Image (cartoon, rainbow, N blue to C red; front, side, top):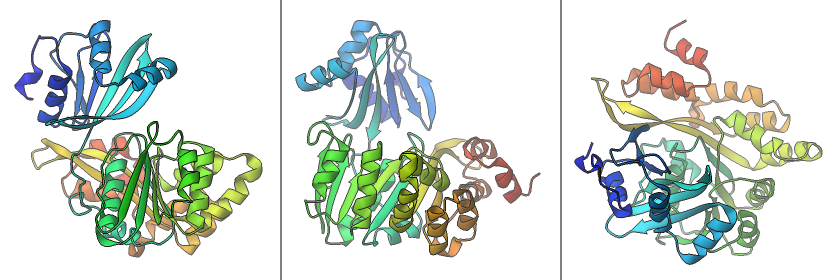
Length: 366
């Protein structure tokens, strides 16, 4: 741990964010009555700064806000935005109320967009980037690297194809410069008032590729499916843990009378679902050396499309198990490979799997 973390002085925002970067932390948490807390390799670490007073915490938070953002926060009691500090880095910030006080979670954003190769993503991710229409979803819990995976895929399209790429994000995380493609990035709150409004407008802006930061409500889901049906590639995220759960979450968001029609639309528009988690990466001595990615990948085949259409999502897992030639893999197979290559521990894998018996079966355990 960097020595600058261990101090009893009142922290400055610049100093805290520099500590985050210097210690390779992914997140910083500030709240009243607690010392600043950072997350390193998935674990929370309490710094040795004194607990923050109400005034200290609010000062640190308000240092990041302009007047308009302050007004929005005071009105809504929560706020998402991106924050950059010259010479230090860029951050995704969420400010919220907690026990009547303001608190914040600050996440680091890589200054450069990682490539598919750097992330060690499978070849199927590159193949999906060459699709000309359809819905491609990257799902997983908060902090599972969804934005990073999508950024790498968008960057690959940007470098290899002549397309119009339009992103709608809250906030913009990775900044993409136009390369072979033309890229326009819109941020919720500063460039548009809602995902749904921006997506409606996007369909009149001649996009080939649309990136939605999150499918967070029924209207956005409906518009995204329609856009995917009408000749656009639509990338998006959901906080779901598997392909089966992703399909169910989308269908269940609609009123009962519309669900069968949504199943039909989804069966023809959905291209792939990649559900992922990040786990502590260990070496042969079981020392934590960063984090590594495990993914469940479903590529929609005619058989899977039929399961979606008929509401037989419980059978999707079996189709993924037999779809290796299409680049598909279950989460348990991904975890199995990481365990047997000594990249993660069995205990960490068991904490992430939703099918522990299947993982044990693959490992030859009962």
